[in-house]
Length: 104
Image (tube, rainbow, N blue to C red; front, side, top):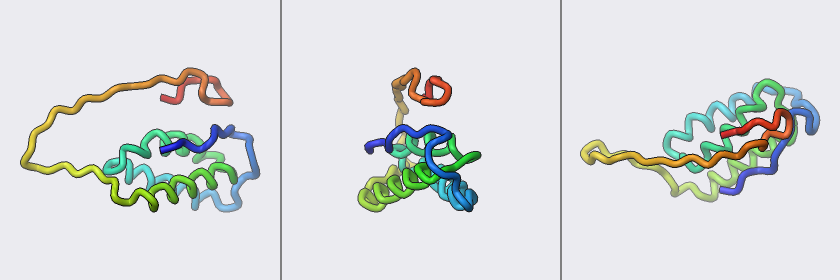
């Protein structure tokens, strides 16, 4: 998944109805349980829930179009198989254009 371009808190016009953005991000958060490929993007989008702007909504639409194109990608956890979970982390210091803090 290619992440949408970095966006600042002050880029673009404020949304007239920010509740639509909040609902969409909330539903995307729920989807991250079966679609871990969108977790990082949803994390970035959730940072703008308090002051959502037009570019942020466009990024949500971009993510929704990705989900529509790749609708066959899902995680399935069978109950009869035990498995060992392994993970990794990749830090990106200075990726937030407003605070220059890490977003991971």
